[in-house]
Image (cartoon, rainbow, N blue to C red; front, side, top):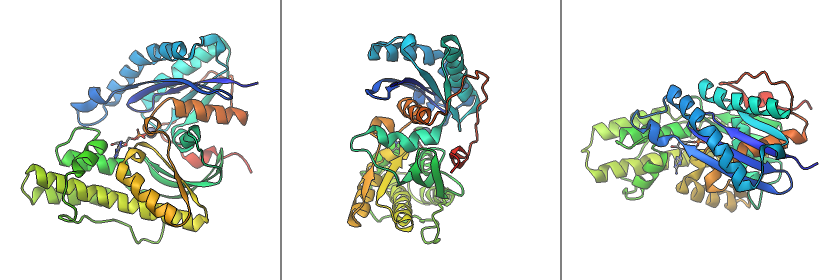
Length: 341
Ligand code: KG4
Ligand code: ZN
């Protein structure tokens, strides 16, 4: 049987719906971003996020079905993001998924959001082959994982404080940019003068694969306070901040490949959309004969396709249930997912 999986993502500020067919691939995906909604608050407001997921999930589902030329009756399993994320937001997706599955008598699969990101480059062509090293860089996580297969994940290192996306966003905020500021900071950095500011690269030489980014925002704050606030200076600081973050990510990712004796690097999560990071990783990894894989740009940030796809992978391993009670996991260790050896 080639099942059709419905995927529902609602862990933070994007409502994503997708239909993935295990033979025909991704049939449709629809997305609603809440960025405009949270913009004026300078960050995600959890209660507003939950309400907005309620508003958009079913209309998005309807258009995904229409785009795919399917009906609810064609669906064979319902995958949803069970965690980690904002609990109210997760509950919206989980309750819709479980109610739909109950009414259609289908199995449900509670997907780990990071597993969705981690496997998302497999939706692209060419796709990486197991085993590979994955650099997960999102607004909430910065992790290096060794991936030996679906459900076979080993944490190699992670941020001890802020995530890379958080470092981008907080630096952007200090420079007066809107939330989330990662992409805006990258844009501002394009007009920055290289070398005018030199910001710290915390833990660059720590000898392990962990990261620390919280010191960077203090350095950005000081640079912003101690200098005039003209547009060129802001661009120069943005340039230095991006250089610092990218330097650390590239260096640690290279070390991880070396340590694991692997040649394929998969980059997933919103910060994976960053152009400088992509260029530098490409150069560094190809120099030692390796290859970098990214999800398509639209699947770097949160989306339903990665959840439907991870659900399909899980279903192959018979990880679905027909128990419609649900509880979400706002905090959830990715390694807890591993299949028994
Ligand atoms: O994976 P994601 O969509 O959501 C989470 O699961 O967190 O990642 C969002 C993060 C935000 O911090 C955002 O600023 C950052 O990804 N981001 C970028 C870029 N595009 C998105 N950071 C740097 N450069 C970009 N081009
Ligand atoms: Zn994410």
